[in-house]
Image (cartoon, one colour):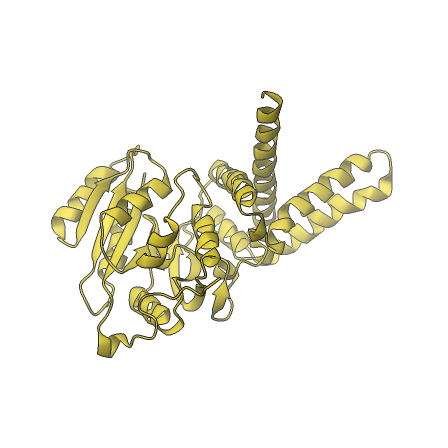
Length: 334
């Protein structure tokens, strides 16, 4: 397999000119956060002009009117509809509506750190990576969100995903959001619109399979608002588990050790609890799991963090199991 490099690889942008940039933003139910997200984009100090495309899905709030107002106020911003309502369709619609050689993905509830785009492009030119990303930094506003932030930035919550817990600059399997070489994305076909979740990870699998490199740069960071309720958190991680199973079905080679953590931990605890009804020593498994979760209290600002971790683990596993049961039903009904 030949190595794929970004088009700008080896280029000195200060001398040779900066590549054109388009920023794409999938938006749904983001009326409360969209102004701040777009402001963090438009305030970037990128040396040449860039454009921003908001792909707006049908929403339950005033997202569409907020997006239209922002576009009227600044000619760099355009709006395209996303009638399908799902993230990958929004991303692809915005990509089709723009022409930048570098495509920067931003979410409607995220805020870029100062200098994000410039640094990411410099890193792309230096490394040749076809996708560059940095840290996902939670910005909690309530005690519950603080507990979620503590959980998602711990090894127990993520299995050590670099973009959540940090690390050195290096090639990785995936990054948060991403700054893409358009030519590389065009080659592999961009986002799979059949994947409601995990479509970013799946795209990175294909980019790496085509010879490209996905690069983590810890000097890049994006702030985001954690889920604010138990139901929203459980739904998020159930969907993560479901769609992770589907991605693994399509790309079994993408399985990573950290993805074993939730099913092994929850499965061992549940099985130990059931066996423990007849054989008491087996109760050490659920007791051990609870003890490990309890250590997370030191990372949180309150006692909710262990319960948040348990919710994340169990919901993720429930999503995996739900996907597996659906496959079994499909085969039985053939």
